[in-house]
Length: 206
Image (cartoon, rainbow, N blue to C red):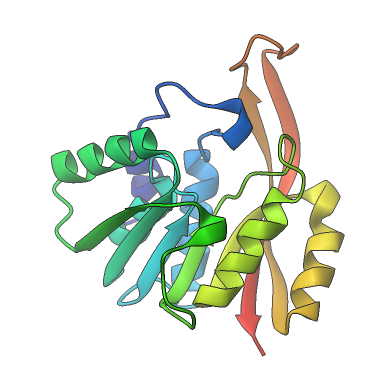
């Protein structure tokens, strides 16, 4: 699958029908999702034939994209069951035939045994706007369950994020930077679009 085709397909994955502000349920832009996954596979070989988890999956754009790029198995982990239902419906309608699982659970309290359960985690965690430290909690969990982690963070926090990941024993690479724009979604939003830079990082245990 070409990158532009991956982006086109991911753009058809629906947004959450009734997003919750406290969970920061903004859809990962299809351009960003496709670029992250394309680099993960074609520069690092971290997707095809791998067991991949999408933490805080929402409606599943990153996990679905990993499946489309040849992952052996994909697990969507999301605390909101309405999001998971949206993702599952899309997967069934599209006809993805790899091993696909969904787990409704809080990322901070996964009902899984300890140790490396996944080859790769891909995630767009909450930025911590409504729940301070949520981004780091996601990253910490991901680092405990996978050998390699791809995670999206606001550029303004990236130095802090990288410093902590290195302290946990990971080699950290800044893979990709992009400006994303989130649409007006809630009544207290003052702008029609809010744009800001983000950075995709790759963690690999040293």
